[in-house]
Amino acid sequence: MTRANSADRNLRERAAAVIPGGMFGHQSVGLLPDDYPQFFARAEGAHLWDVDGARYLDFMCAYGPNLFGYGHPEIDAAYVRQLGLGDTLTGPTALMVELAEALVRMVSHADWAIFCKNGTDATTMALTTARAHTKRKTVVRAKGAYHGAAPWCVPRPAGVIDSDRSHQILYDYNDVASLEAAVAEAGDDLAAVFAAPFKHDAFIDQADPDPAYARRARELCDATGALLVVDEVRAGFRLSRDCSWERLGVRPDLSSWGKCVANGHPISVLLGNDRARKAAASIYVTGSFWYQAAPMAAALETLRLIRETDYLERITALGERLRQGLDERARAAGFGFRQTGPGVMPLFLFDDDPDLRKGFCFSSEMLGRGVYVHPWHNMFLCAAMTEADIDAALDAAEGAFGVLKRQAPELPPVEKMAFLAAGAR
Image 1 (cartoon, rainbow, N blue to C red):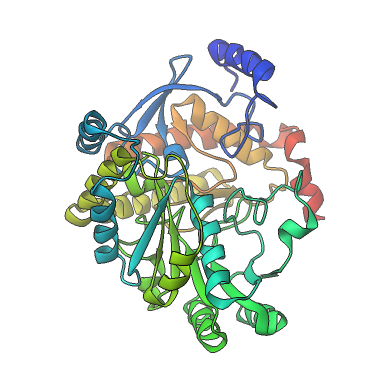
Image 2: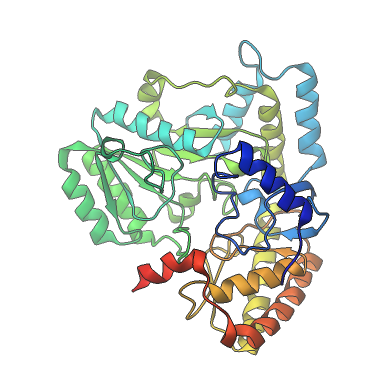
């Protein structure tokens, strides 16, 4: 399905003149179907509007920060109230202490909190804290896992030198033997083991954590004196009101959080236990905007809603409704359609689709029907969604599967995704 997107195209041309590449980072649509909009005008609840006026039910939720709905009145009111009192000040307000106290009460393994702005800030602080605590250098982390955009972990190599990636050993997520081998290779130099709440790499099926893998990661850290880090930036408070691995009976020493902590207002956090407190106090981390009070006010209200509402149960039920409905419609249309990961953070991939031509066609047809889905990245549900929204998405999917069934035999290769097919050979 092709749309003119004239205002969007005009903005892209202007951006190309003043922004390197015209757009940067994970929100670039360079690896999405050509008709996907790059620029948006506004959002409300579970919906957003592009600059050409098209309205979408948004299953990306701003890549995760939208937990309770865009423009949530109570959360935004708390932000605006504090903005009137003061935001970026010479020092923090009392809200910093209140927010740290609230998080320590909610997250079982946490005894302290350090606030920052981005998930990359929080994961990098976790690495630095682990090295300060252990006086060691090596970090063990899963292949393909995303922990941010700093040189030590960024997925693209441009501008990164070998020393930026030194003292790292990779293992296969959920593979106990691979993890053990990586830890053995690190030997007496192991500072930390990093893990995601579940396997949510791009372009491939997601996977829940194997409890045996999670328990073994904890045991190996205990045996070696290393710190266990769970990176909750993407999944935090979407799977649990506590740390995600608490459900497995495994508590990390450190956890990094971001995205939906303040429902889209800019704040992230590193949480840790008393074992790592002295080290966390010894490292030097700071930022001009890390102490802003208004996002902390928004975070406190977001945490209140997390504690006091049934948001988690509702989005979980909606996720199952979506998954079951899509499975029925895909089978009726004759497609192998894989839905992996938690229902609240789904990923859609088609069988026999190495360059995502089926996924691109399906996603584009969904977009044309007012539903924003992603062909290769996990998505998100938010508490502003309703059963009617899910049913509308299923109606759109039925139409999209129908178009795909007719067009699939003639779909041309997706040139921008050729690297995936090449990697599969």
